Image (cartoon, rainbow, N blue to C red; front, side, top):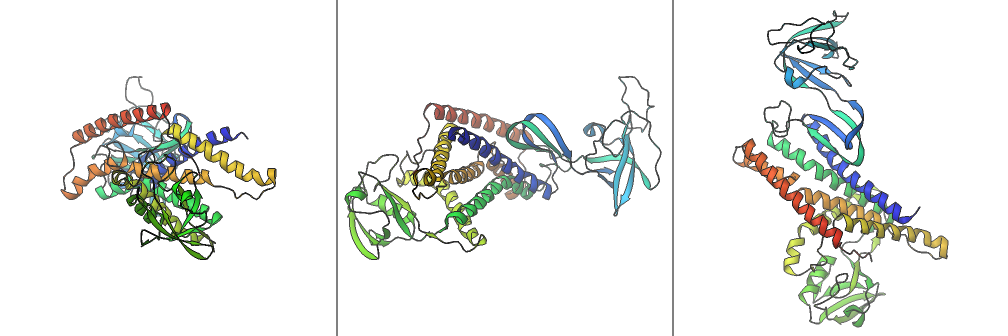
Length: 470
């Protein structure tokens, strides 16, 4: 297959998968806390097919009835609340399971006959098949083993619709009562801690996906020794090349300080810009002392010394043995993103290196990563050389997954982090932000967010970020 086409397919599949995993996190935690999700959709409308409807419940008077799977209530439950209903249910394992239901046409409980004019509200009923074709039919008599339940319809939770839509770009949740605190079983009516948990669940699921992807990566290549810094590559020309640094050198100390992470080496290097930096390295079992002067001006694709930094890989004993390293690597990615503004201000990272790519830039990166990975796997069979396969595509997927998770938690209206921020006054001051102000803030924030994204995407199309793989 053409690598360009393969890269495009992977790009679309990854974006769709990241969104779907994010929404799945919201769904799982919402249902765990008994918050209604009216629809969980794979893809975006128009709808292709409804896969099934989950279990729901009704509260008739003080009786709680279970609505079976794929049972479609044959009336508009939002307009039928507080009206009298006649239901029939079967007792199964101590629970009342709905078999059929008809709702009265008025609050006085008058049930209209089956044949009515088109403009008159008609009673409706439904068998347990959920087809809904019983609307307007006469109420059937109770069957053996059925229990008749009559009373006021106080609460309706129809169950989640699981749908498949035509546009395969992720999915979405339609959560009940997101901004209506009076909706029973809705999001806004839930405890603030539960709402925060639901909001955090999307990003958490993305981070968990990143951890799992890292476990797969480490199980293939080995676990990195994060306390050892190795020179993986040297640019030409560069201060490192001029100073005699070699690929494979293990950096023991820099500027008189021991080096136990690449972050520490980077920090020290930026404090010696334009000045001689003494290095102590281990080369083929021997300690070697060098002096390198990091440059103050350097290409955007290189650092002050002009080196690529790596970590030695340790053999993997078991899949579970990769989990601590996977969590650590994901945490380092999160920390790297959150500390980006501070490092930019401190000058430990160049503005070019701090750029975040938009869709076109990421598209180009995927094309480059897939081409490199395919080439590295074809090399042994075409040239007879033993080229080590690369995993740039997997690492790009992990980076994108973690970036989406962190971005969604930023305290910006319209994002999960913005909703969490708006929930904090309710926790600290026991007062909820009035719904009208909350809607106004979210609306304005959403418009600003879309405007900024539009500007960012247009800029990215005109002048995409140039990612260069080592």
